[in-house]
View 1 (spheres, one colour):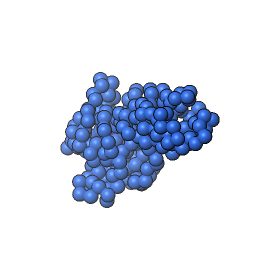
View 2: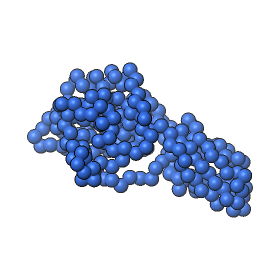
View 3: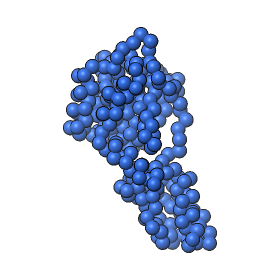
View 4: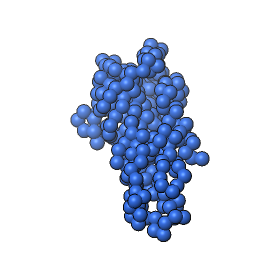
Length: 235
């Protein structure tokens, strides 16, 4: 695992630290949805490695890398867009494309290696920035990788922000402190690529204002490029 520290992130996080925290209210959190451990099927991303086995024509089987444009190259086929698609969806697409060339195009697709997965950790942690991960981690582990909480962190109201491929932003309030004793009780599910973890100094209210001020303007450039690729894949 590697920690990345681009200068642009330093300036973004510095601004978050010096411009004050989101508004405080005695009414607690407004607008946050309860976290659910159920996650959608994994969607393929550029840099992932796929093992594609074609049973009736093993000579056509390939191990392919998903290109920066989200496409893969297979024999006899034009480049196939697979980014932002699940493995069952990719199976169906390749089956359909191969049907015009093979009598029995039965095949299997497996992700044999995952490309870089990055998350963004900011707020009251000792080493805020982008973290590159090789496997599944939860919010508590992400905070530890970011140097742990500082003395002013509100550990019981850590904010997870997740953006869907369609651009919809969902946010969740997590009791990460409870995760020290029982991760299941704290509902610390595995993070997804490009999740944002924000550790506040005080209670967060006015959910929409928080998203606008601290998240929409703070996503690293690489993150927005990722969503551009996903947008292209839906065409």
